[in-house]
Amino acid sequence: QVQLVESGGGLVQPGGSLRLSCAASGSILNIAAMGWYRQAPGKQRELVAVIRSGGSTNYADSVKDRFTISRDNAKNTVFLQMNNLKPEDTAVYFCNADITDFRYWGDNYWGQGTQVTVAS
Image 1 (tube, rainbow, N blue to C red):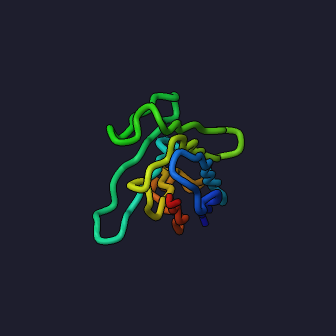
Image 2 (cartoon, one colour):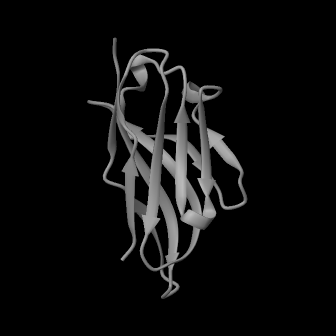
């Protein structure tokens, strides 16, 4: 069974930094795209950043030049480095991945979410 587990959330002051990690585990054959989404109270879940197996990336306009997504393919892990955080970045951050398992069954998976709060 495939599982995504996030870590690294917390409380940080405006202008501060946090690094989120998400490790995929289970009977994994291949991971295509991995990404981060976030959901603030009363708002819809939105894409923050995505990185594909070849390394190409896309970012939401609101986080460009502040956030960096990266991945360690050997460890099936994706990271989100968040710098110059703003109060509007406060949300639950979710990891997402397109994974094919050893049965050659492909599916989209979500982590449980990690809270990021930006406040002074």
